[in-house]
Image (cartoon, one colour):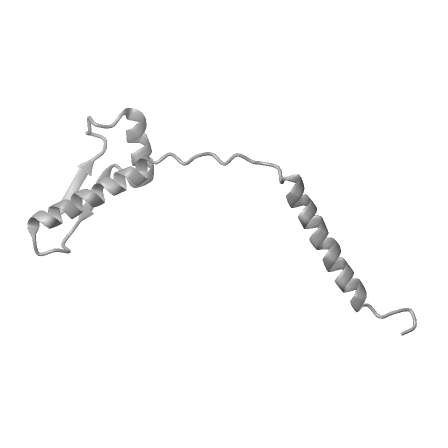
Length: 97
């Protein structure tokens, strides 16, 4: 079973949505299902796959908002650096060596 969805001739999508789908998935979406012996079940599967492709192509990624590190995380980082420096300082040979 094969399902084909022509994005550009669709009346269900707005122009903005059509542009987004064409840019991400192409002008024609195609899904194939031959998993089951039942034609009805294959039809269900092919429609689910087509809908999933369309959903992924229409999804708008949220912009990442840059944030500053918290005061506690900065302090933890500096404390970790101090602890590491102290460990390395103890490994150095002393003045009498």
